Image (cartoon, rainbow, N blue to C red; front, side, top):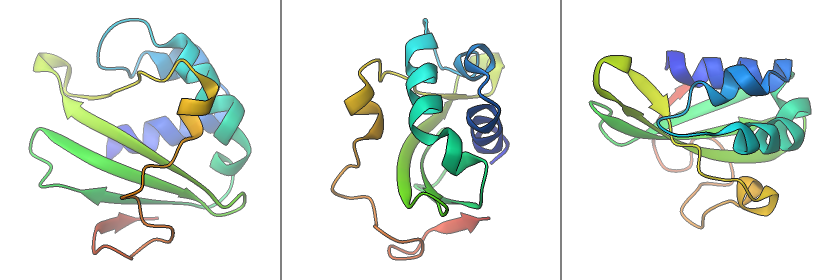
Length: 116
């Protein structure tokens, strides 16, 4: 859950370098910039995070930005001694805002673990 909170804070703060540093591997600056541009306003308001999968080494996280009615799905996973990292392979702005068909439109629709 801590890595998810850090993602939201860095999007809200507009800190692309710090957000990119949370990535699982490689250079993620463009993805970080896309996420900040797309979700920055929403991240500064109320956000609900829902967690799917069992969560020992990887987890799907869905962020609901209440002020903007936006949804963002993330994958987080453990990476060796680095702990939890975010998969950040969305250098295309349209890909960064795409919502997968499995993602619930509202929090609580699929029975997840939730944090607000």
